[in-house]
Image (cartoon, rainbow, N blue to C red):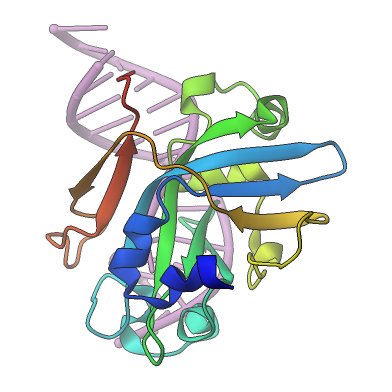
Length: 191
DNA sequence: CGGAAGATAAGCT
DNA sequence: GCTTATCTTCCGA
C-alpha cells in the first residue's frame, strides 16, 4: 500500500509524518475519529529511552516486527499507551501517540472518559488510549487493513496536517531526554 | 493558573 | 526489590 510506505522509513521521520493522520475506531455504538496531533519516536538499541534498547522481550517484540501494527503496553500500573510500529527494514522502532483531537463521535469519547472536560479528553498518551477504548487486548492489531470500508476495529487513515509542526525533546523520560524526537501539530488558530 | 505527590503492575536486575 | 513512554487531585497563589 503506497500511502503507508512512510511507515517503513526512519522512525523519527515517520513520527513527524503521522501528524494529521486519523485514527478511526468503529464500535457497536458508532464511530470515533480523531486526528493525531502529538507523537514521539522510539528506536532500537541506539535509543536508551526505548523499550527496545535492551533487546527483544515478550512485551516489546512488536517493535522488532512488521510495520503498521499497534503496540500497546501498560505504564505506571494503570495507563495504556498506543504506539505504531514504524522503522526501516531490518531496524527497530515505534511511534508513541501522545495526543489527538476529536473529529467525530465525541459523545462516545466522553462516555469512555466520564467527568472529563472536553479540552482534556485526548491530550496525553494514557488519555488517548482511554478515550478510544484501547487496552492490552489490542496489542498486535494491524492498523492498515485494505479496503474502502473498515469493519469493526481500529484503522489508520490519511488526513490533513493543518497548522504548524514544532519539534521538541521527548516528555516523561529520564534517558536521552535531549533528543528532539517529539512532534506537535499546533492548530493555525491558537487555542 | 502551576507545581507536587500518590496510585499501581509489568518487566528487568 | 526498584524503576517506569502517566493521570488526577490537591494545594497555594
